[in-house]
Length: 101
Image (cartoon, rainbow, N blue to C red; front, top):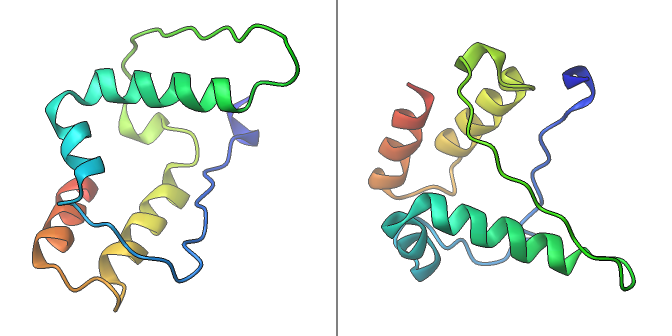
Protein backbone atom coordinates (compact mmCIF):
# COMPACT_ATOMS: atom_id res chain seq x y z
CA UNK A 1 0.00 0.00 0.00
CA UNK A 2 2.69 2.52 0.99
CA UNK A 3 4.73 1.80 -2.15
CA UNK A 4 2.17 3.82 -4.11
CA UNK A 5 2.32 6.88 -1.84
CA UNK A 6 4.38 9.74 -3.24
CA UNK A 7 5.17 13.17 -1.83
CA UNK A 8 3.90 15.96 -4.05
CA UNK A 9 5.40 19.41 -3.91
CA UNK A 10 3.51 22.09 -5.77
CA UNK A 11 5.48 24.63 -7.74
CA UNK A 12 5.64 28.23 -6.57
CA UNK A 13 5.56 29.49 -10.19
CA UNK A 14 7.97 32.27 -9.26
CA UNK A 15 5.55 33.67 -6.68
CA UNK A 16 6.57 35.17 -3.36
CA UNK A 17 8.25 32.94 -0.81
CA UNK A 18 6.72 33.51 2.60
CA UNK A 19 9.49 32.07 4.75
CA UNK A 20 9.38 31.17 8.43
CA UNK A 21 8.32 34.58 9.74
CA UNK A 22 5.08 34.92 7.80
CA UNK A 23 1.75 35.24 9.59
CA UNK A 24 0.83 31.78 8.26
CA UNK A 25 3.84 30.20 9.95
CA UNK A 26 3.25 32.12 13.18
CA UNK A 27 -0.27 30.67 13.34
CA UNK A 28 1.10 27.13 12.98
CA UNK A 29 3.83 27.71 15.57
CA UNK A 30 1.32 28.61 18.30
CA UNK A 31 -0.54 25.29 18.12
CA UNK A 32 0.82 22.97 15.40
CA UNK A 33 -1.59 20.09 16.02
CA UNK A 34 -4.73 22.26 16.00
CA UNK A 35 -3.44 24.17 12.97
CA UNK A 36 -2.76 20.96 11.06
CA UNK A 37 -6.23 19.62 11.91
CA UNK A 38 -7.88 22.89 10.87
CA UNK A 39 -5.94 23.03 7.59
CA UNK A 40 -6.71 19.36 6.82
CA UNK A 41 -10.41 19.92 7.45
CA UNK A 42 -10.49 23.06 5.30
CA UNK A 43 -8.69 21.32 2.44
CA UNK A 44 -11.10 18.39 2.66
CA UNK A 45 -14.15 20.66 2.53
CA UNK A 46 -12.60 22.60 -0.38
CA UNK A 47 -12.10 19.33 -2.29
CA UNK A 48 -15.66 18.15 -1.63
CA UNK A 49 -17.55 16.93 -4.68
CA UNK A 50 -21.26 17.65 -4.91
CA UNK A 51 -23.35 17.57 -1.77
CA UNK A 52 -21.72 14.48 -0.24
CA UNK A 53 -20.66 14.89 3.36
CA UNK A 54 -16.95 14.94 4.05
CA UNK A 55 -15.74 12.47 6.66
CA UNK A 56 -12.44 13.24 8.35
CA UNK A 57 -10.83 10.94 10.89
CA UNK A 58 -7.71 11.55 12.94
CA UNK A 59 -5.67 8.91 14.72
CA UNK A 60 -2.48 9.47 16.70
CA UNK A 61 0.29 7.01 15.92
CA UNK A 62 4.06 6.85 16.01
CA UNK A 63 6.48 5.46 13.47
CA UNK A 64 10.22 5.38 12.93
CA UNK A 65 11.52 7.92 10.44
CA UNK A 66 12.77 5.11 8.20
CA UNK A 67 9.19 3.82 7.90
CA UNK A 68 7.70 7.07 6.57
CA UNK A 69 6.44 6.37 3.05
CA UNK A 70 8.66 8.06 0.45
CA UNK A 71 11.19 9.17 3.08
CA UNK A 72 14.13 9.16 0.64
CA UNK A 73 12.25 11.50 -1.71
CA UNK A 74 11.17 13.71 1.19
CA UNK A 75 14.76 14.01 2.48
CA UNK A 76 15.97 14.84 -1.04
CA UNK A 77 13.37 17.62 -1.38
CA UNK A 78 14.21 19.11 2.03
CA UNK A 79 17.92 19.13 1.13
CA UNK A 80 17.14 20.79 -2.21
CA UNK A 81 15.15 23.50 -0.42
CA UNK A 82 17.89 24.04 2.16
CA UNK A 83 20.62 24.23 -0.47
CA UNK A 84 18.68 26.34 -2.96
CA UNK A 85 20.26 29.60 -4.06
CA UNK A 86 16.93 31.34 -3.54
CA UNK A 87 17.07 30.66 0.22
CA UNK A 88 18.91 33.62 1.67
CA UNK A 89 17.78 33.35 5.28
CA UNK A 90 20.29 31.74 7.63
CA UNK A 91 17.37 30.97 10.00
CA UNK A 92 15.56 29.07 7.22
CA UNK A 93 18.66 27.03 6.35
CA UNK A 94 19.19 26.19 10.03
CA UNK A 95 15.54 25.18 10.38
CA UNK A 96 15.78 22.81 7.42
CA UNK A 97 19.05 21.36 8.71
CA UNK A 98 17.31 20.72 12.03
CA UNK A 99 14.41 19.01 10.19
CA UNK A 100 16.91 16.72 8.46
CA UNK A 101 18.43 15.70 11.80
